[in-house]
Length: 211
Length: 347
Image 1 (cartoon, each protein chain N blue to C red):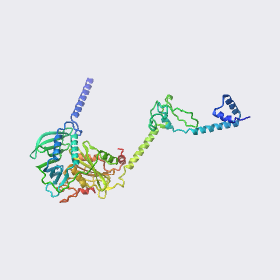
Image 2: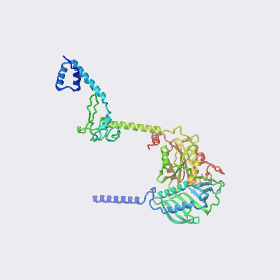
Image 3: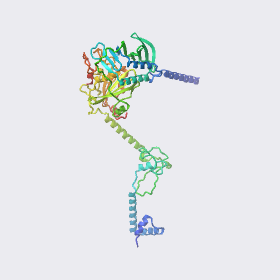
Image 4: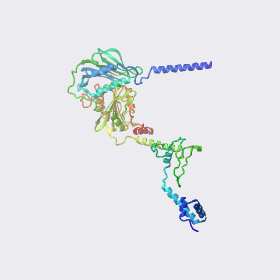
């Protein structure tokens, strides 16, 4: 019994005519080696086809195909990333499931998108409310943690300063056109600006207050 | 009958509400800004500001605050400045040089007065034997917040009172023994001017983006009227002036922290000055300089040291301090988180 030989690959590729196709199938039913070889060729073809078409990110595809009225994923739509927030739109009843445009051969992942006409929710299980809760909790925890760390005591590298109260008093006196004064109970005269000699020492010198 | 009674009660309630609302509409809150009404008195006050830069005079300025009085000899020389020395003192006088910065500040203060209060001219009075025009700054509830006396003959400002919300005078200034001419001007004194580096809006925004807290608005009636900076030992110091048109509050801010070798922190971790600027207080809202009323306060917060000097009623100065970043004191979890959020610019 002659084996199928090169006709086997033509059979796998669907290139045989109807009569030839029928004869080849009859032969496969009776010939174990040809059946084994045909099976191997089909597997190999699937594998090669799968390598030739990379699996796109499901979320990416979902966002592209979910655009209403968008025929081409590369049409004049909104920029990538702006069409849908992370996690998808919780309420989008008019969105349709993405349609496959090219024959995709196995292996491929099944995306369980339920359609409105099926009577179920259109929300993908990938974007369920639980994920929102977890994401929110994570963000809140990170924010509180960052704030707690940032709210610590002054960093040690902050310089120790001695504000020049006497200079400040002069600046304030200039802008308010007044003379800064001290407690008349302790000293009846003005709190004289720095650098100007005084006739008496005050009981409490405001210049010392910066230390 | 019951239905009639209910209807009557509802009608009474509606009438009462209308009366209440009408009363509220006709008696606005004192802190309502701006106070409604004309500002006819501003012409008199602007004339006084103009006269201050035109008329040479010598006088005694008497100051009265909540804790005492002070008499200062003043000599004004247009184009040169204002010399002040305590009466009877032998030291060199303190001279405020005339400058465009001060002229601009005067305009801002007048604009702030006009914005915050209703400024009206009242019946003229005599002050120290001189006829004076009287101008009142009235709050939204028509209570008097400030009163000015302007000399009929020279247009110079003879007197000024600032009143607290209860109507009691907080600060009072009187010009007595007025003589025209600048005899007694201290020729050898150089004098002082405001710090030269004025900060415009863009520069203030840049500083804010670098973490500086420079509010444009402290409380309902305290707004920023001037901002300038200088450097002390290569550290920038920013001076912001807030005013309602009657009182002035200076806030000095600089990066850093206070040394604790002389300023020990209290139990709450507060680091700052106490009464009179010495020691440490448990809060930062009540620090009196112990003078005729100047308010002094210094504290550190968020990597900055703040110093506040004010010639203002205690409640106004206190509200200004409270409006600024609070002192680092509380070490509780939420206080620390709130401080962190503030430092991160999120609140």
